[in-house]
Length: 111
Image (cartoon, rainbow, N blue to C red; front, top):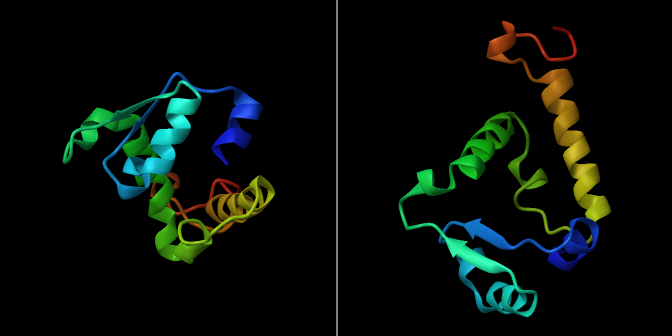
């Protein structure tokens, strides 16, 4: 999947991640080395070192309390197309069915 993304966007100079096992394994380390991508791990327990993604994750995960979490997080995708379809359903839910407190309980489509 990383190679597919790189074909579309190009290889990054660096990737900043937390200390999760999915980011500290040999496979990612080898992939990064082969493609000249530097892995920058934040210090354990210091989410502010990766503030942009932590903020994104907080906003992205919040509506999932009303949606089956496995739709996005626990599903093993086989293609970029499958991810796009799943995210389209998620964003449809957020924009058309999930009320937002900042919109006085309305959805973005009705505000």
